[in-house]
Structure formats: structure tokens, C-alpha cells
Length: 424
Image 1 (spheres, one colour):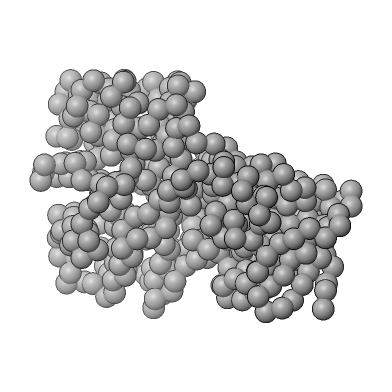
Image 2: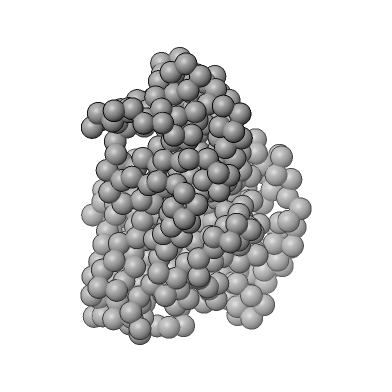
């Protein structure tokens, strides 16, 4: 049986849900087909006895395009801005993380000369030439602009944490620097985990008239006159004026007709995904409430107790996320990475093992579909040469990084599809 709709969105992550909401709000009949039973993609949240576990320590940057879009569309879920109280670990020594005037004066992480240079650098951050940085890797930019190796090491750690990516020999400098600029305006943690954001998008899309179907694996997309046919693996067929592919690159390529897939491969080139090792700890309490953030300086490590700001754990309990960034090099196995994260937690929160209720270790958690590298252009829908088919996802377009890119590209694809469907 063949069914007709204005727009079919394939993929129910943040990009797909934003695209569907946008087309439905424009009055277009919209159908979302999601392979899994649950929507959200990397924004899913797992509940463990009242602890809401995201896939790592998710946050929205308040100056980023995703937060701005959600706020402007009245889609922003409830949440809170954290007050960081952090420690750094370098060469085996703990020091205060300089996040304000008092901690800057008190920390032993920097000498007085380095403190002056660091403050000067932070003061110039908003004026950094991002056009120059777009053609450099983070490592190249650091070596060009920060001669002091110890200060460069601190900036190295700060950039990888803001970009959530460890391979600074490949990551585009402008991507990490822009995120660092945005971080100065604050970050936002979602109450209840990112499932609340997914629910907000999904319910609003349905309220606007969109139909959301889970458990629907798509077999392919093909032209059908001036429309398109979307075939599912279960044998259903949908005819749509416009199709939005809100999927990772490999799945997108599998569904496209051969000529369009060939064009997309040419733009993508060798696409490298970004992953991290993530250890989530559910604790009956946080042993040291004076520390909710930890930053490795000479090792690519990060710790955040998001439950100190966001409602993601039972009253009095704590949910801690630890991350080991992957640096794009052959490294330790999963067991060694977990041990490194646990040892990091030992230094930051002594006694945590005595109050541990549950641990979840993800040795290779997905962060981004494609590493943003100098010389690489993110594809756009026009690259397909296939009118009526649109791309969305964290790897599409030039706006944003991570969730910001997903939300921005989904909104842009939805606007384009709605406009074209109106002309059909």
C-alpha cells in the first residue's frame, strides 16, 4: 500500500525532530520514520533508579545556535546554569581550576607571569581571527599564537573540553575557539536529562500535526516523477514531495540513489567520527561537594557532577560523568581507559567507591559523526543534485558543532522542505 504525505523525515534524533516540527508548523503533512523504538539518537537518556544518564555530560552553550533556536521557538526545556568549582590535575598535582578572580589568584596551576598571560589571552579571545583559525588545526593555532609551552598545555585542555574532541592534531581550530568563546556566556544543563528535550521536540511536532513512527527501518529513497518514494524494510511505501535524511553519513549514503551518493562521497572524503570513553557513576552522595568539575591538563580527562546543578539524580545523591577524550592515535584498551578514569576520580573525589551505587562504562561513546578538519567542507543538500531531498545532522552545513549543528541543520532542512512542498 502506498501512502502520500508532503514530507517524510528519516531519522528521529535532534535533527530529525527539529526538521519535522518545522515542516509541521508550516502546515505540511509530515511523517517521521525512526529505525529504533526510542527517539532521540545520541540525546537519549537512560533511567537507573531515578538517575538520568545521558550519553556523557551533555550541555547546551547559552550563546550557541542550538540554545538560541530552542529559546526563540519556545522549545527550551527546564534546566539550570552550573556554578563550576573545579580542580586541575597536572604532573600528579591538584590545583584550583581558574574560573574566576579568587580561584585565579589562589591557584598554583599558573605562575604569576603565566596568570597575567592567561588573563590577557582570555581578554583577547572574543577578537580571535576565526577566519585564520579555520585553516589551522588546534595544535597549529596553539603553536602559532601561544609560545609558552605550559600555557599552551592549559589551552590545549580547555579547547578539547569545549569541543568534546581530543584529536587536536586534526580538529579545526575555529570550531574549538568558537565553542570556547560561547562558553564564556555560560552553559545550560537540562533537568531530567536530554530525554526531556527530545520529549519536548517530539510532543510539539505531534501537536503541530506530525506523525512519529518508531521501529521503521528504511530500505531506500528513489525518485518518482516529481516526488519521491520512501520504502521501508517491512514493505511499506510512502510517496512524499520532500524527503529529509536526518541520519549519520554511512546510513545516508546507503539510502541515496547511486549518483547522489557518489556526489556526497566526494564532499565527505574520509570521514572520521569522534568518540570518547565515558564512565558514569551513580553515587549515594558526592564525597566532596566543593568539587563539581575536574580537568586533566597533561592527560585528556574531564569530570563533571552535573547533578549539582541539574535535576538528574535522586535528592541528596550525585551523578558524575567522567570522560577520556580519544586523541586519534592507537591507545590503551577499554580496561586501561576505565582504570585511568577511576584513578582520576580517586584524586578528585576520594571515597567515591564507598558510596558507589551503579557504574556504566562506555568505551567508545559517539560524540560527532564527522571530525571537523581544516580543508573539509560540510555537505549541504544542494551537493546531492537531487531536488526534493534534504540533509540534516551534526555533519551537515556550516553552523554549529555537535547538538548545535543538529538543531540548526534540522531547522534549515525543515524550512527548505516546507517551502518546496508548498510549491508542489
